[in-house]
Every structure is written in C-alpha cells, then in structure tokens.
Image (tube, one colour):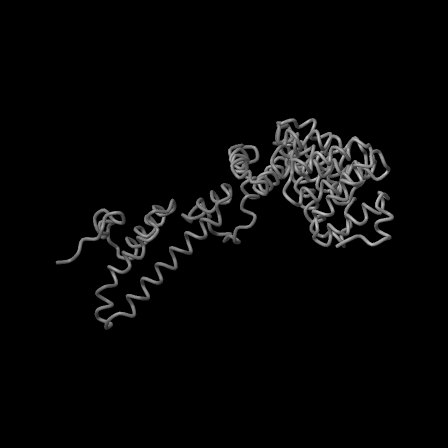
Length: 390
C-alpha cells in the first residue's frame, strides 16, 4: 500500500515515523515497523533516536533476531535518554536473563541502575541482589536488597524485604530480619495486595519466633536462672514447644531431656510436660500405668501423633479381627476359637516400641484372671508363630 500525500510529506518527521512504526507493530506488521524505525535512526542524532532504537529492539526481539535487538538496545542506551535509554537497558538485561546469561545480565542491570529512572530502578536492584546472592556474595546482595526497599516501590520493595529476611533468618539474625520486614510490610496496601501482605506477615511471625527461641535459650544458658524458681522450667517448656514450629524437633527433645535430668527442676519440668495429659486419680500413681512413660516420652520427642496413629491402628485391627471371628459360625465354634482369636488380636502391635509393655501387661492380667502361672501362654508368645492344631 502506497503512502498518502500527507504521509509522504511527513516522511522525514521522526516523531511521525516513530508513531507510524508503533502502529504497524501493534497491527502485526513488524517488517514495515522495523523499516520505519531504521529510517529514523538513519536521520542521525535526533531527539527521537532513542525511541526509534528501542522500538527497533523490541520488534527485532519479537521476531527472534536477539543479536540485532541487543545492538539496537545499545544504540538507545548510548543516547543517554533518561526514559528510552533506561528502558532499552532494562530490555537488554531481560534478554540476557531469558537466555540464562547471568554474567552478561549483571552489567546490563547496573546500567539500568545508573540511569536512576524510578520506574526501572527497583527491579534492577532486585535483580542485582539475586545475582549476587546466587553467587554467594551476601553482603553485596544485602546492599541491593536494602536499596530496593529504600525506593519505596510497592511491588518490588516487599519482595526484596522478604528475600533479605529469609537470608538473615538463615544466618541467625532475627532482629535485623524484623527491621527489614517491618519496613517492607509498610509498603503494601493490604486491600489491593492481600497475598503479598500475608507473605510478609508470616515471615514477620517467623522472625518473632526465632527471637523468642533466642531469648528462651539465653535464659537456660544462665545456670543461675535455670534453677531459679519457676523461670528455668518455664523457659524449658517454652523453648521445647517453640523449637518444633521452626522444624527443630531434635533440639526440642534435647531441651526436655536436659530439664528432666536436672534434679533441681525435674519435677516442675515433668509437670509442664504433662500439662495436657488426662486428669489423674489422686489415689493412683501414674507410674503404675505401663503406657504413661510411653506417652510422656512421645510428648518430649514430638512423636505423639505417630504414637496415637499406632495405638488407634492396633485397636482398630484388634476389633476388626474379633468382629469377623464373632460373626463367623455358630456360638459353639466361636467359644472354641476365643483363645486363638484373642491371641492373634493382642499380637497385633508386636512391632511397635510399646508392644513389649502391652504384652507384659496382658500376660500379667491373664495370670491374675486365670490364677495360673505365665506358662499358660503358648511357648514363645507373642513372637513365635502359633502352632496349628492337628
């Protein structure tokens, strides 16, 4: 299609050429758009040179000619234009990031930073922080993350705050993590960005947890405090119950162990460990119940859910076995099989850590009920396989 007289008369007007090229690119004619951008570049050092170079870079990149697109980006950058030069540097850095060329992306992001355009400065600083972090240079990354937050940008500032806080928490610096997270969360509009707000709020809570862990541990490190009144047992409980929230269950077990091994506070520590246990009979001694030490150990080890699963699984299996046998055959047959069925039922938890204790309890109860010695049980019970009757 030929140009109209008006278009022909304005052929040398770089602003009109750029506008026409932009429309052609949007309408799906990148070839003609590129030709018009190149026409503007051929006019030399005009006020629209940076705009044309960036437009050409984008069109060429969309068409798959990345090398030529980068050359056009560099031409725009060379103009020093605060808007289109900065955008071209940003586009150049993205082409390197997209290709996984991190060594080349770094210098391009630094060029973006040098332009100091507020629209592109925050993502450039964040990108530099991540590159430095990936390279193991935490101090450089920290500086870039802090600079990103300092821009006040509502999109990239909170992300930088979260990334830096994660590293600080890993390094055992929860107080610094709190400060950067507090600064980051202030940049977020909770109504318009609920996910971003929740993400930082959770990180903030984790930082408080780590601070609390440090404070409880410091209290126990003071030998005078650890045995002073209720302080030591309280610090023991708080530390042992908080550590698992940060995935540090092994440390929690050790905290309980130390508290229970200290004769000065063992009684108070045990009372705190057992605060959620069922009410005890005032006339009875919990030590007489074979399962009490098992439950207590599971609480201190953080394995109570596993213990409950084993117990309910064993109980369910026992009842299922008994129910099936009860439903089969006439009453006389059920009576004859009662001994065998019960023997199989109580063998169920043999592989559990608490299995031997249950077996001992069963043997003793059977002895008392039958008035017979323990030999009333089959030889090798419960581990030996039952001998089939002839």
